[in-house]
Length: 226
Image 1 (spheres, rainbow, N blue to C red):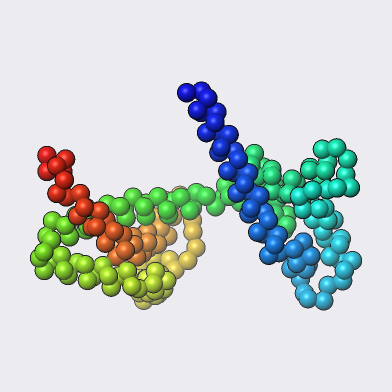
Image 2 (cartoon, rainbow, N blue to C red; image 1 turned 90 degrees about the vertical axis):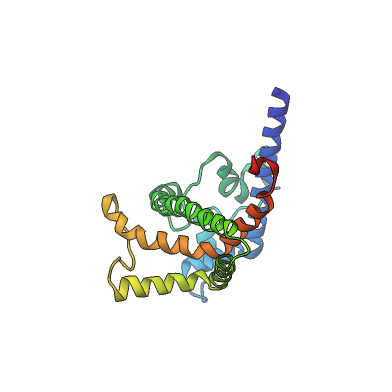
């Protein structure tokens, strides 16, 4: 058992390392350090000296993965990959090129995201499972045919339409909810009701058809009848 756990942990580490390395290579295949410097400095007519100074200030003047000019272990550690990407595996997120603490930004923004995502998921599961079970319970009836047609229509409409229409109708016309922004404490409820409702409503079409298919596959099995 211990050998199995150690082997799985080793596999997991190698997978994380491979994903980290692949992401790093893809990122720098699209954006070279010169492109990053030019974008952050601003403007197309940037001198080579300014680009070099920016790269030196942010540690992008080093080789990507292997530094053949360094000595000993610095051949691997004195590289962009080690200083900017490998440390992510131990949770050291560092700072962005703009100087902002990434861990702090995630900490500040995680709770509002969780406050929206968790109720949307839980309420969505309840609503969609109930709707799907209703379609299965009334199968081969007009209620099922109408429900399936409604689900197909809802699935065919982009979620962006629901967002824009919901904001226009309930925030701008009826003025029931704020159109944007966020607050902490009990005041955040008024900012969450509309996004949660839109999030649940926009998922009903596709998810209800998926759940209905799964329920139909299981509905006649022995353990369900028992």
